[in-house]
Image (tube, helix red, strand yellow):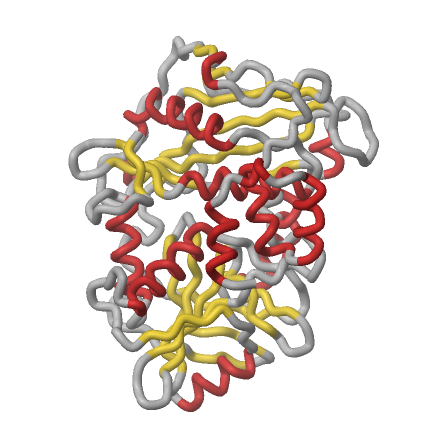
Length: 420
């Protein structure tokens, strides 16, 4: 499939496609067509999410704002949350913004037994003028719908949900830390809440959104991490669920993560097959850069083959690099001679490049860290060393990170950054 057609699918309103056509496409080319499901509204005439029905109950006990220096990722939450119920009989109910607190759920709820849960991760930032911004949130809404479709949870109008999320952020915007590099982490989640034990599409579901102020991922500067190239475990397999942001994909990685830590490594490098193809870094997408013969660089990331999560940061890195290489939108400092490849890459190729001096850098890319440089990989009993600069970054990631952060915070004008 051509890159132009895949971009068209990524940006199109897929509600124009018939569900049967979409299912056929998903069988033929899952990694691309399932992203096209992102705008799908397949509620069969039932009510979709309607922001005009929003009900707001403000907290009577506002929390004390935490010191930014004391923030630990994912441990502090704002005063309010958004909830939207769904039933098979009537569709999406009235959205509510209410005080943050426990959810009422029966012990027979399907999410507790069969992991019927999906989620997204995105951030809100304060720009230099004090305005609140979000970075490509439409992509998160699209991906969340593809994930919902994959495990038979209800899909929804992503534009409508995004409007409600914006309203929630506006209410709690004073929770966004003012320090540079800080942000408000936004966690939309959808769970099956059918009150019965049995493996089937749920007849009830709940969508909720919570907010968490977060600090710098690297508070004292970039620190390259060491990876363990695990050959004992796999994150995903062809035909599975690796390309979707499902809760079920994360719990199985906890034990391998403990094993990697016991060996002295920060994260797992997930390998696949007897060839030991590189797939992802912990919970991030993976990029590797090679020196080309005659000069310049090749920036490589594994293709979306059904095992790789289509990350928003991944897509952003690829788009920035391609626009730079074409001359359409140069990125300051980024080398001009740059080839971008979505292709398989094996550990033997990385190891050989490290030994010959062709390996330029390797890094993870994701919402939390944005860019996470790597300095070594434990593989089959020895370490494969990866070059990093004095600042902890490499010749490509350094400039890509600066461009991404500038666009996210509004310091660099971009239509990717929207003002609430």
